[in-house]
Length: 227
Image (cartoon, rainbow, N blue to C red):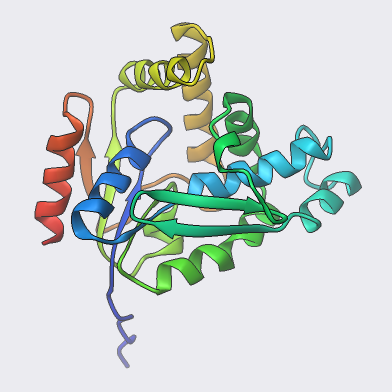
């Protein structure tokens, strides 16, 4: 008896480690294809913001205050070709989500099964509609395994740290390359070693090294393979 093959969804799933270019490339690919773009990292950062505001961002998953803050967290997202609007309990928090501190909290709590479970249904609902470009760390393996094209980005850690440092400086935040690189390496270890949805390529993903590619070159590479 053969196992039924799930229908292919007209979508691009882009996974990869921190600062490998996921969001930038996903946004540009979505524009080129006329698809919606969903940055799933924004969902985890919104949860991190809710937990931080409740004083639960550094607590364990089993702490009653963490459980209560997560249960009270209501996240909604509106995908568009140019980006996403993220609402937290009815408040548009999109401009607040690039803060580096929230990124560190999000990286830690995204390993918690309760957090991943809380966001799974929302991500699947968005993905199932198709005509979407979605980026994250488990899109091709968990959220959207039916995507027509799955991309797994890689890049040299120091290159990624330099990119991240430029992003921080554009947003008026100060940091040193050494600190940013150490943070990226720590995130890599957490993402790859977590028990739930670890950062690994889907079995049928195409691996793209963006270390020495321009955004335009990488977008061309992805769109050519999708078409």
